[in-house]
Image 1: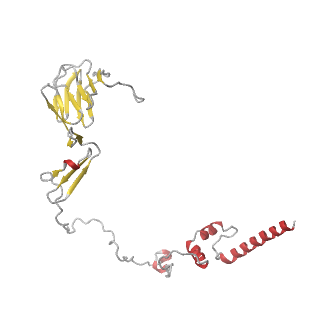
Image 2: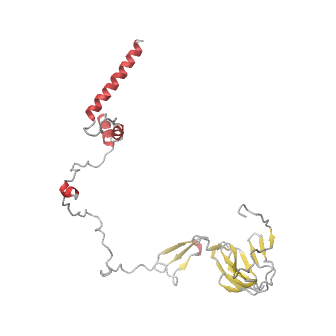
Image 3: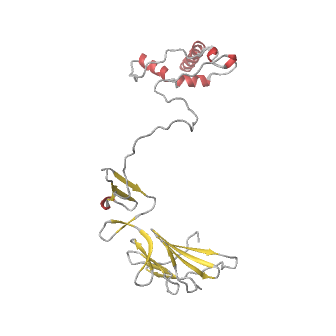
Length: 280
């Protein structure tokens, strides 16, 4: 019983000392009337200078820092526009930019000097040994180096292991078909729709996909770079086949409401099995 009473007495004494300390330490006006200074206590607890002072008093290491500010933190009302004060012009601090000025089209121009030549399409030389699928490196005539990075592949791995530029333009070859000029993928489209395979994509490992368009009229392709256009391949419909770095894309152009609204592309596959995805 005596031990319990002694413990309770110590707790009461500790609480009394804490309350007395708060009445001495808390500045006047820091706590609103009829409120408990919890927010003030928290700001006091996380105040690093106070912890540093306590650590120094106990002989613990204290991190060195700049000298504390000893000037006046308050500005006289006469130097502001508050309460009818006249205020004062803001002075520019040392090593800062000048105040903002609106653009003046009549102001004289300031030349920046001659820029370094760097990359020049006419004189810079591509370094094939440093290229990757998505980057090209150029040695410039002035001794500098230019690295160009792309979001899509621009080079393909040739049989000798080097990286060569992809060229998606269509060129006609002996078989009468229009082939992508240079790529590790072998992509070709029909020179005319009388050919059985309208579009063909062959992978380096021998896998192959080809397709036709049911009901297609016999028309000759018109070429423009990497695009083959088959006009009136279906009633009121043109077909565009476009080659790109990763394959072949088809676009149907409908010229009237009488154009077909459904299309069938029979597949001819080698080493591949088609399947529908969740998106159809």
